[in-house]
Amino acid sequence: MNMITLPKIEYLNMHKTQKELKQRLDCVEKMLMDFTKDEVVSARANKLNKISSSMDKGVGAKFANAQEVKNYLNNL
Image (cartoon, rainbow, N blue to C red; front, side, top):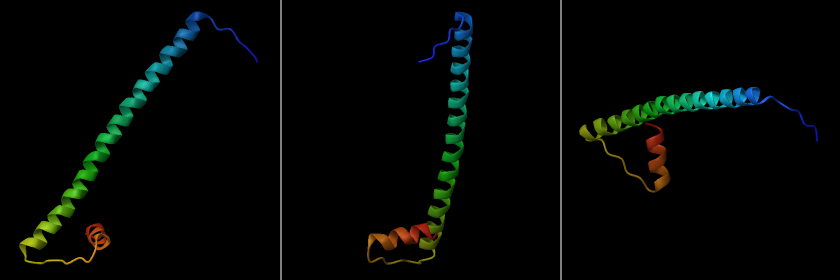
């Protein structure tokens, strides 16, 4: 096993840099999750609006099983 020696200051600087990079990565991850959460919620709201408007017009749908319901919702 090869070993190298680092001065304590250099090691602490590396550790500090790693910590800062991890914090930045966590921040970017949080921003990305917040952005995608808004997108998913908007898409779901649009589907629900389509269903609501169809129901207001008196349009109904009958389903034989859960798979048909799932397909219907996915095709909105």
